[in-house]
Structure formats: structure tokens, C-alpha cells
Image 1 (cartoon, rainbow, N blue to C red):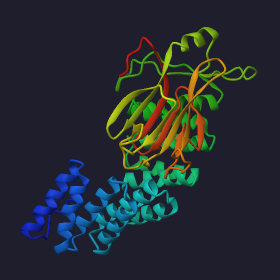
Image 2 (image 1 turned 45 degrees about the vertical axis):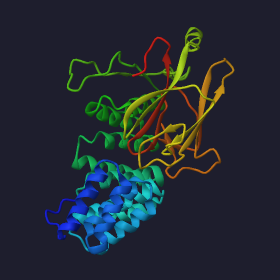
Image 3 (image 1 turned 180 degrees about the horizontal axis):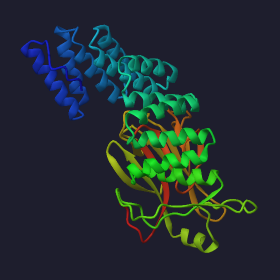
Image 4 (image 1 turned 60 degrees about the horizontal axis):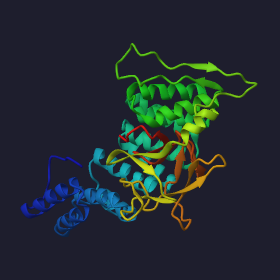
Length: 362
């Protein structure tokens, strides 16, 4: 929300504007749009209403209309800092909504000309370069600029690690994930990414018994040990015959984190459609997720165990806007392995895992 300290509105228009802000804060987006439209009928040059209207349209997934509203706001020549916000949100709509990464970067560049120390703009610019255009070196520079501005941005540390993985600089990637976990020990995506980075580096990862609490210096750091190169390196997901028998008593779980928080879902059906669609099998709550973002299809292994394959897009083959990242790599489809970290958009992550029948869901 923009706070200008000065609202050049009539009393009636001000009431409508405040009602729109209140409706938006309660996720009553259609009501909010109606309120902002009432304001703009009498005050078409009021850039705050155009900007807030654009944010609401973006939340509804109406990205083209949102961009149009942002353009109307920019046409009113708002102050520098506010113009930077509008350009940034315009870039987000292009990147996360429409998958137009090059155009998004142009918007982020405009925002950075106006607000060069905005860490989120640098971070989103890096995301467009890394996940959209596969320009890992350029993305790395953006994440490092983000961390110069805010060294405790754990998401930037994690994304920096992902960029380093693409550059095959595994030791540096591991160090980056470690930094993310120092700041946020509950970052599941960074935990799994660190394990996978150690595998690619040819190291054995010794998992700690428990996670370190923030500020706990007594907890011993996990270690990496050189592997026997003749036998291949250890995978934390490899199992013995006894473990395979035990896994038959396990069930499959999808850990979901989105705007509604964290939850776990037992997977039992033959197929699930995941996305923003409230009528879908698994509804995800984020403006950055497509209406039907991906499908999960059940299959059976030769050893009798069941698994799931994730495929980008809806059941008819139409791809999602932003695609799927699994363990830092963009994929169209994958047979999921325990611990796979799946990213569908900013703030939307899935983790595929097994739970023992004796465990309860959190």
C-alpha cells in the first residue's frame, strides 16, 4: 500500500478509497476493485487508486489488466519512490504472472534507476535472470547486490546457492545454503538444496539428529566427508533391503507452503491437479501460481512401492506460466524422489516425502 501522507480527494471519494483498501486487506478483491473504480470515476488522475487497483487485479491473477492499471498510475507522474514501486510491481506481473522475463527485467531496471537500494527489486531481477532466462552469472550478481543491502535475506542466500549450482560451483553453493539456514533454520527448501549440492560435489552429507535453534552455538555443524570415488557417493535417499520393507509401511506426503502457511497432505489418489483453481484437487493460495499449474500422477515401482510423477501444466498439456523448479532446476516432468524440493513461484514450495505410519501429520 502506498502512503503519501496526502490524499487530494473529496470526502466521498476518500471514503470509497479507504473502503477499497479495507476490502483488499481482507482479500475481498472484487469489492476493492469496485471501490477503486468509484474513486477513479471522479478522480482519474489519482495514481494511488490506479496502483492499488493494479495490486488487487494482480492478486486475482488478472495480470494484463493489472499492468494496464500500473501504466495509468505511471502516466500521472507520481513521486520517484512511488514510481519505483509501480515499476517493480509491473515487473512482477510480467515475470510471475505472464512469464515475460525480458520485459520484466526492463521494468526492474526502471525501478532501480529510481530506487537503486531496493533489495526486493534486485532479488526479483535475479529470479527473472536465473529461473526465466538461465543467465546464472547475471543472476548471481543480482543476489549479491541484494545481500549487500540486506545480509539477512535468507531467500537471497538460497537463490544465490541455486545460481552457484547452475555454475557448478558446489562448495560455494553449500556455503550459501549454510548462510540461509543460519538465518532461518526452518527453511526446508535450503535444507534439501544443501543435501543435493553435497551430492553433486561428491561429498557425503552427515545429517544432524535435530535442527539447530536460532542462536544455538552449542549445536555441532553438519559435516561433509569425501566419498569413495570408486563406489560413487552416498545418497541420503538410498535404502537397504530392510529399509525397503519398512517403506512399504510408509505413506506419501506432500508438504505445502504458500500464502496460507504450511500444511501436509497424504497422497492417495491416482491423480491430482494442483493450482489456484478452487475446484482443483489441491488448491494453492498464491497469486503467482497458475490456475492449473501441475499434475501429480501415481505409479508403481517394480519393488511394489508407489510414487508420483509431477508434470508441468494442466491435464490437457497446457504449460503453466512460470513452470516448475525442482531442486533448483527447471523441469517439465519428473518422477519425484523423497526430499525433492518443488518451487512453483515466490513463496510457494512443495516437498515430497514419506511418513512412517507411526508418525502424525503436523
